[in-house]
Length: 342
Image (cartoon, rainbow, N blue to C red; front, side):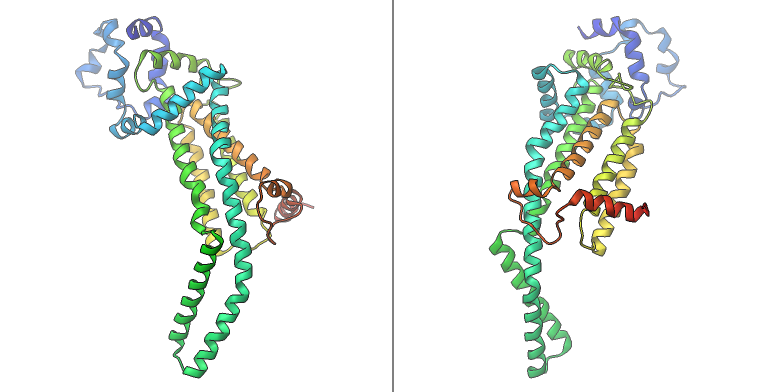
């Protein structure tokens, strides 16, 4: 069945093998090798080898191990089932599956992250008065007991840390809980990206994989009609990069609190990673770039959505002094001021 399909569409298969995103992983043939010099003498059946043979030779072992992992297999089956259930074209399947997962999994976790962060912010404001009291007690003990300065500093730091830990345990808002989105969203994004790439590379090899591959070659829209090929205009990588940069700027500009030095460093690191990802995505199939772009646009929309005071109140997120009553207007004015636009 596989050989018959490949023989009838030999031209399309050649385009697939010559495609830039596949050649990125291919071992280039040695002109001196006998396989290279005698390839024109092969029969049609020899040229059109099985997909299993091509996959085992073409891709490095680490990529094959990752693409054949159980989490990626579940993600790939989810995309296929979503396509069969909804009956949508492949470009819509990739976009809608990305949005669906973000809505079902990451949106509730993001809401909880905002809830936890707001509790921490309010707690830290209330804690300032306690810190002053601890500082007075330490200074008093320093004078009465004639402690060395180093000992007084150790006692002060230990008392502040102990009381802070007791508070976050009491209020059930440990800072580690605010990282839950990263620990869930990042593996999900990686698995879905590799699963989408598997579809564009006929992995794992099977008759159905070949059929889906040819569907993907005509399953795009607008300028990226072939989802197995690289975006010729590079528009998808550019849109993805701009969306991610906007997410960072929205999160930065929405706060009326001056960021700390560590926060500035983290923000610049994420900006750098976003810019680095753009040239990397230029060598990926349009299907993967489309998934990344859809996920980024959704992320930007979600961030803007959760800035609304009405939405935050609806989700039960506590109000803090660092939130704005008119966040969108505040971001616009702050951006204009930063860019010196009147």
